[in-house]
Amino acid sequence: MHLQLVPLQPQHAARGLGAFSGCAVFLPAAAQKTDVGGESTGTSINHSQTLLQRLQELLRQGNASDVVLRVQAAGTDEVRVFHAHRLLLGLHSELFRELLSNQSEVVLQEPRDGAAVFDKFIRYLYCGELIVLLAQAIPLHRLATKYGVSSLQRGVADYMRAHLAGGAGPAVGWYHYAVSTGDEALRQSCLQFLAWNLSAVAGSAEWGAVSPELLAQLLPRSDLVLQDELELFHALEAWLGRARPPPAVAERALRSIRYPMIPPAQLFQLQARSAALARHGPAVADLLLQAYQFHAASPLHYAKFFDVNGSSFLPRNYLAPAWGAPWVINNPARDDRSTSFQTQLGPSGHDSGRRVTWNVLFSPRWLPVSLRPVYADAAGTALPLARPEDGRPRLVVTPASSGGDAAGVSFQKTVLVGTRQHGRLLVRHAYSFHQSSEEAGDFLAHADLQRRNSEYLVENALHLHLIVKPVYHPLIRTPK
Image (cartoon, rainbow, N blue to C red; front, side, top):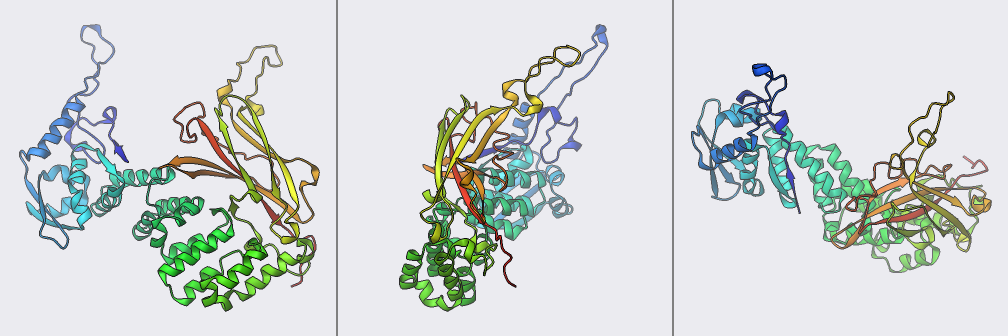
């Protein structure tokens, strides 16, 4: 998979050599206005493509070059030679300007992957475009950062974030790279993708490359998308077996598991069979006792003695049938749809047999009041009609009966939007409702569902997963 970065725009090109920087090109002639022969409008003469071809030829043949770059791959005798031009390199990079100010030949030491793509890097400096492959993103970004070519640095970072959203990028490797370079936007994009697709990542080779620091960032999050909490425990146990971290790191990670979200029968099996608990059991003994107590009593009674507002009692985004249901909407731009599903009232063993039924309404072109058709104002003057395309998709989730809000429990709704990548369905977007709301206010606000190649659609279908999470809040003040 690749992306073509073409940051330059001919209509923005400058008139002379002095404007060539980053993403600009030279135009031999710009739009001119003249009064000759009474002509009052200008005519554009655009030879930018021809000029780009000449610049590429200039680099390829080395005509009139005044500097030589010798790029050596670290740890090897391999050297690549580039005949270049001091003016063009200096216009892009302050570092190149300083390096070449008083010498015509320099030796540049680069990592092997950087040396392998240096020809692409130099070509970008001449014509403002290049083709990026996934494996080349980090070395190109590293070169752009080292030599201060900010336009290329931004372009590659945008490419990485876009490919993360589509599920194609190596999120773990890019996360660690973002941390090392201080790219906070890229770090956050990687972290969000990993949280929403932890099931897929935990079952891949990338999981073994997760650092303790990254694991510590992921485990406390409530927006992790998993089958259930038991899946997260098994993924963590596999990571502990491979990484062999210090005991303090392992015990801190094990304490991030939300044991009250695991049914008692499964907790018994973990205590009997888990190698991680056999090794670090005492570090989480209090949490296991807390989980058993939580399952043994009604949540309302438990809340009289213990605080249920901590993260341990908040479900994550579980895909298991007890907490939601998938919903595939074919041709979602066509008309309104509805469905219903059931969820467990709460994660406590006391509530395991109690269900809440939810009704869902999807409308592809709901119009807010401000945009609904108005035929005349107070004076009788006709006003323009609102167009259906001015609306936005709407999703409403309501309990089938007023009994859906049990004592001591409110419900948070989350809607996941999937995308297909390499034969697997990944989460591309997630929308959460406030506990008191029945509707996601920004649901698919910028989606074009009528476009068949929309990033929100898979084979012209909208793949949703509806999740309802019970949130406990004590009706009786807990003792201090």
